[in-house]
Image 1 (cartoon, helix red, strand yellow):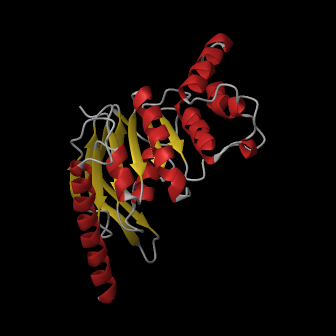
Image 2 (cartoon, one colour):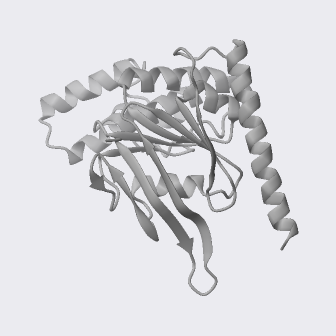
Image 3 (cartoon, one colour):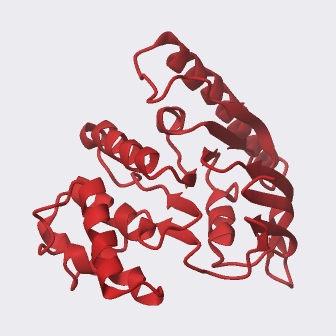
Length: 258
């Protein structure tokens, strides 16, 4: 059985003038997989991620995590927002260990968990700093470490590099890839960057703007870590780019018909 199951999912906003964002969407994610959601703006990928996180409920259908239907936020799901959402009044160590207060771990176990996460995120020596004192890459690592603190079953990434300039993007992709592979965790990521999806993912779900239809479930069959300079990498980028163009063309035709 897959770790994460999205079953016949439909999401509708509004009652008087209902807007169907997602309709009858189904897919699974195996334990340890990194799956990216890619598609035109407005296709429902962020709404879908929010529902997996338990922040919104489906109109119809269900989302099941490790056998349990998701009915709200919980420590079983770690979430990293686009702007990282760090607490500016807390130090690095307090940001990372924030979620541990909701666990049954002893003080000793919490300290051991914090030390492990600081090591994994290469943040030793920066424990007492505040977010404003950190580079963008360090803030990202703090956010991911905080999301992993309670050992969630799935890590959800909402365009974690969406606000990063091109010069820093590949470096931060490398750092993020290293962290999640080391943590050996299941990941679902929303991104708008084709090359990023190919570099980070085991699978890329390319979504249409038409109610979240999955145009293709693309499996990235490359040795890990993925080599951006190999010809096969470029072939995946070209293939997914063509799928996205198809998705955008369908969106334009739909708008022309209105």
